[in-house]
Image 1 (cartoon, rainbow, N blue to C red):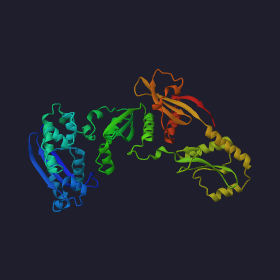
Image 2 (image 1 turned 90 degrees about the vertical axis):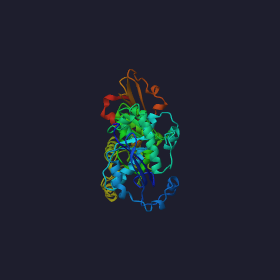
Image 3 (image 1 turned 180 degrees about the horizontal axis):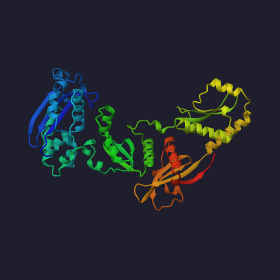
Image 4 (image 1 turned 90 degrees about the horizontal axis):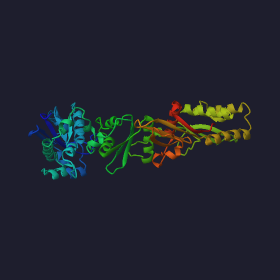
Length: 461
């Protein structure tokens, strides 16, 4: 595709994301691989104040753009220049997102193949100290005038692209502009080698910022496919743009199974609380079993919604689950339904009181003894088992150690290893910080696949 024409673009704006900011200047140079064959540059009235720090950076102030055309007034010209040409820019996602949003707002349906000179320069001129436009021009001896003005930066980007074009001995440009080239979807500061190392298997992926801090953790059946999905679409919202711009490195950990991926994701979030992982409600139980003494001295058991400073004896994710559990407790310990409160039972307080007064209740002392015994057994009810499943490859198997009603450790061992004492196998890095959600995931899986369970001990209610 060496005969293709390239629209080499630079813009200046009122802010950093297209959803709430506008273009103040645009420059477009049409390059045919040998020379510039057409150029266009203009200030644009953004119809909003230019922040002071932007004025200081670009030198463009409100007075300068007061009589400039608005974007809709030059949209047709810009569309004609960009249409059917490969879009090239330094940090291409920024310029492309603004022009895409502005053209759409002006009524133009436009999309283009993209090339990023940051990414191309990384591959063509390896080992340079920095790939910012200013530092690149300095390293390569490219003249850069009118820094942070659209025409000056675009003209320097033309020269940079020409250098890349001339030194493209490994055909990087042609590879990059193939339809749906995956690497073009990635943030410009992620080296291609990092992306290429990501597998298409189940596991978790970890996004880090330039300081090495974890900012997001996700899980997937296909890690590579899921990672790509984060960078597709044209959402110009501030949170997403900041998120993408902050990603400087991607790590992954294969899990072998979807359950392991889910548990690994939960554990990493609990340990690091990444800034871009929203507070996930699913990680906390919704309903809980509490006890209290009523005015007549009876120990009452009740299901309620878990809120701040509510510490239940036992937790549940659904009303049905809590109802079944409490009914089982009532039957096993001969408790009185009239002294039990199911969540949203449908009876008002008055109706419950009338029901209680209709017949004689059991003696307080004997009833409370049974209720206390039920709670004591509940507290002392401990189950421990190991879920054995497939590993990350054919030579290993995974284990999930469920100890005393909680997910305690996750890991992988050799297929030939027999587990005699699980405590001897696990090490510090295998231990997890579990929660209700993780415990429920493991317990439901154990019930669904009993053949994969190795029981250690179980004390019945």
